[in-house]
Length: 488
Image (cartoon, rainbow, N blue to C red; front, side, top):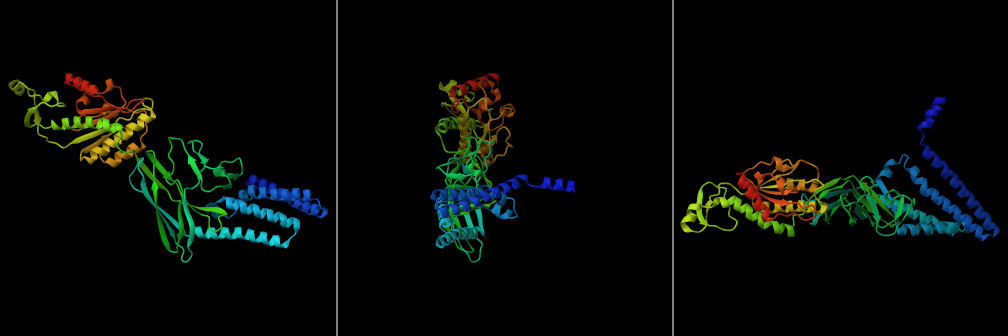
């Protein structure tokens, strides 16, 4: 028997029982205060009546706000607790304060009319809860997002809200981002744009049982972290029975990376706006935001030089002599026709027929965090994406190389890699880069003197500076080619 009693005691939720007995004690004190308020009223002690009645209402309210929701989480109505979330509005606060004042007046005066008014007000609260729950039940949600999204460029998504009920319409429904718990490890926190009141007072906003607010909450994150997809409410004023309504929303992602939405909320203020009741919809969405491919000043600086070097490289790739012409700036010295130059006393160069396609390989030599700043790294990623996008539009046969990249020649696969890449300590891809018929555009943070000599003759280098933008000088390019020619 003793062992059975000990086992039963161990299985009890001690914290819940402690709160239960505290709540019973608090309600007992509130009842005694209400009895004393009646005694003081019969004695004509107005101050005593006000103090006792106010204490009774205050203690009862504290018990209702601190203990009842806690115990409700442990009862059999688990489904109801998981489905709906509640937020008290300003209108609801004012309404409940008015009901408390009328209730106190009814207790002190014993006026039956005030009791009737109080009963009607409380019945309106109950009717509001039932009506809002009915509005949200039977509502289904679908979110469609574009396949390719670029940072800094607005895109359009579509939200479809369906009312599956046969006869009852839904009113004033909003699709909202769900609440998310505080995550100290990742640096997430919440910020309320306007002053708000919540209870319990010392808890974070996402852990309070109710909060006076009007969907003016936004989550603030560190710069390295990404937020959700939906940042604000999307409002549907009316949903007829057995029908669906759609709404287009403009999405704007400031930075590249992975954006996730683990769920959506369907909320309503209907019918009296006392509460914002929200039903969580377990619908997950994820998008990969590519780096911006919009041309920048840096892009316009390096593009003419890359294009000129690439055209010069491609023009001389054939083996059959096409023509002998006058020397032009940018021509390679190895194509000079010395016999024709001696005859005509002017510099002549050979031009060969093109036997292959325009092949270009873009190489992103991912640097370590210690070699570049965050700004320079993001500029380099954006420049790489812009160059890949530009030459893909020019019908160039593109291939890509980068540390950890599988080697797929598809543009969007490379953009996806650039969307998720971060600086890391890894072996330079230049050490294992083979010399092929492709012309290379290489973005690297390696020192100039550590570049393999075999790559200078068939590559254009863009150096990622530590505290500046990516750059390459024509003088360094020519010096590198000279070194390559000497070794050849």
